[in-house]
Image 1 (cartoon, rainbow, N blue to C red):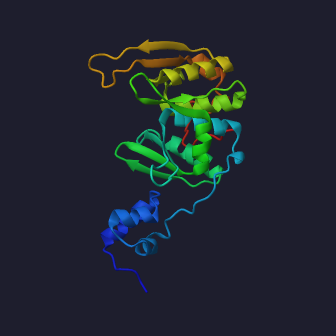
Image 2: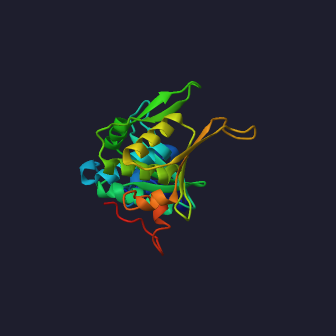
Image 3: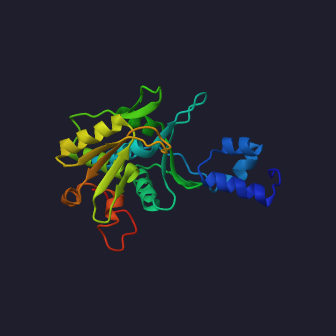
Length: 262
């Protein structure tokens, strides 16, 4: 028996949501349709859930995930029903190459991702219990004096240099800005993240300049901004060690796809 006949607009909406990674159950609830009806039209676009295998990634790639999450990642574990969703937020106009880099890493670990645009934000979405647990090994949330939650990187002296280079690259690609001459700024309003980056740079022997800039009266955020500047000479010295997509834009002529992380 065929499912209820839908309008072309309804079918288009089902397909669009399925391609964005929305579950059959959530599409059915959103559109007030039966799950069997939704599945009939979305089955060709649904991604088969696979188990994330982090052992297939290099230490640099593993670190890159942590660094990027620290800058622009968020967790949604669900309150009533466990969801285990991780989202990475990027600039929709400038960061398509970075979204491909993230997708490449997760697909190497045998995990499909959803990439979609929401206003000016490009979102890379991963549904994985294994990924949530992995991130929680390295990133904790603490409550600051304003009673606001902020991320904290749990640094460990046992981390390999490659893992730390990966974390640094992820931070640059999320919260960083690379100038054409390769001078690189990482900005954050989190004192915890600021201190964590300084520890990484010290461990790796990378020299950087730091600034603390208090919010002005007209600033949207009233928090102090911490700025870490890695000079172009340092970036060129370590360019083969720091696999930043933003840096690679100026290192390769005609660059259009992320270079492979070794």
